[in-house]
Length: 259
Image (cartoon, rainbow, N blue to C red; front, side):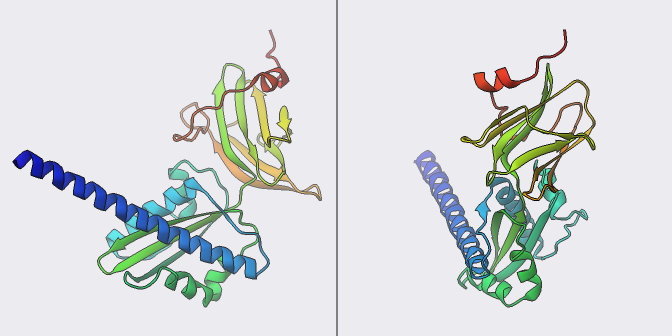
């Protein structure tokens, strides 16, 4: 009987936790929806939800709720871009808005307050942003919201070392032309599939410790969006993402190492 009660209690706790997580996701989705309404009203492109931004925002929302404080600088002195990099992100430019409200008020109360603030509007309506992530956490009678913004030239951006050198791959965002700088030499992709939006770079031999990634605009100027940093002899490869396998067409396009 005791065992059955224990199992029932555990199941109820799990169900309550799942329900709370679902409510937090709904609130976060509602806030992103309101943000995109603001951007449409300003004739700006809506933002695409991003998993890495969401994870980073959620972790900081939980931390903010636990300390009952709102600050763009955490207790370790880090800012939004630092927290994103600690999670495995590579973005160069990161924006952040914070908010708190009574838990019994609708989640729109926070974005409604942002809409009345010129400082928050300056961040939310920045035309450079392409992606967004929102985190929600409750503490007592207050819920906290953290929203992160960034600009991306590619999704699923991955870089790693293999026997041939450094391989950088991903999928183009909005049909842009990807470029690398190592450290100042401009490098074009070895393989590009415009239909699938797929690109691959192969940089043979030893590389610099920092590779810059970005895209070329129509006027020929280049925008840097990501830093790919070497760490313990291995280039950036997100911990949540497996190394992509190159297909036959991509392998044929790769330059062969010197014998």
